[in-house]
Length: 546
Image (cartoon, rainbow, N blue to C red; front, side, top):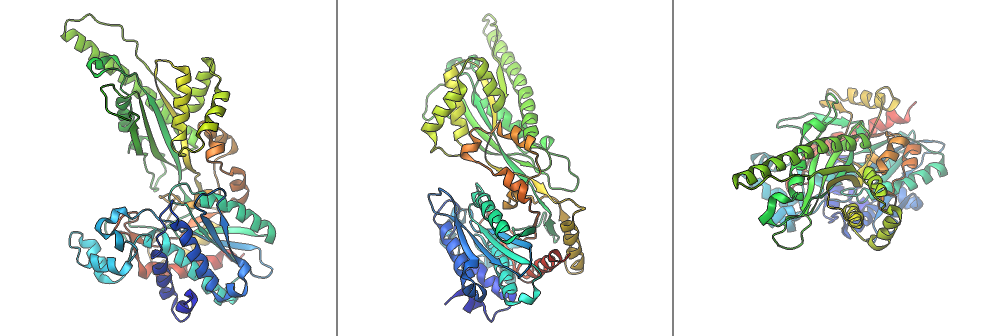
């Protein structure tokens, strides 16, 4: 039976629940063939709608160029005769993995079985209460963000059945690969530009239905966002001076340097921007790994680490420079500490003091390349040679490998730290409070203020595909960023000019739930399936109007 036949006689909220359940049942873990399966399911659902049965060309897919899995974005368009104003409903279709479900892994996509399990789960009274209430839908992707997909699909269906309510055009966009590289959203910019030119469209706003959650126990506020936080993957290549453990004071252990950097940066609020009443988050370490591949008694010469660093208003190159200066200061303290410990050790043995000439040089990637040039290294030729041999490396690893390759050509005996950027990079953007779209959003929330407690926030605190619909950083700031992003044009070529020319205002009016990216993930049905779709439609109607 086609999906529409199941939906035809249902209410809007029943439709959204049915679509959510269908989508949750499709395993669509990021980086697997399941991403193709979910795109095909979304396309199938769309093609079952009567409007698209009559207008099949208004549903289409876009394959990611060069993608080995054949992943694709899904689009659907409802055109109102003579209209140019267009509202985009967008959402992502992939999920994180299901290993965290443990013994419930086989039930991770079965909402009913999970609900029954959590009814008896007394170890967590909150989730047990939610399961017993019948108001929550469980399962991987139920919150992040297949319920958001379902809201968008159901609203698209609603307008296709009620064309008299349309005062403009509506575009649905389902993106793949959101949970790591955002390559689906990036590729979709070509399609958005093409559609804009073909139909002379003006993109008024993009509505993302990515999830929102309580900020603390008992929090009932619903947070609506008029911008997206950015993200930079700030990386540290750390080279020490190796030594035998029997002569440990003679070297510089790269893991010790990494540990100092981790203590300095990880979760440190001193490095965050000061933006009142916004959730401004510190950097978090996502990887710290020495590069020894087998056991021996030599200290680790090289260690790699990188951090998730959120951006809000400050340009990324400024953040990188700030981190570099802090690390430089801390490494100076570390060298002094090492010298003091060695001196105390030698003194305790009545050995003569030694002249300690150890130092740790700290560079940004751009500064490191300048340093190599000054040392006579043929940098450009070496980078070209490296790329020809290493194109298959992971996008996160290739920068580390390049620096290691270059440093071996230099073959100095200097401890160093090189800061650089790696994929993904998510630009930050937000809507000005004096803009038309901000005022329309504020008016819509005011209309519903008696029913829900809303709070408008500038930056969606999680990572979002909305980052690629507009960009606030200038061309000069982006150029400084790419100078510190090894092989950026080859491994992560972002169409900055296209983002800037499209410049689509993006808001997040999301489904509400708890436990995203955990096995306790669940979406709250009364708000997400009943209230939210009407809120979005009313905002859409206001946006279409003058």
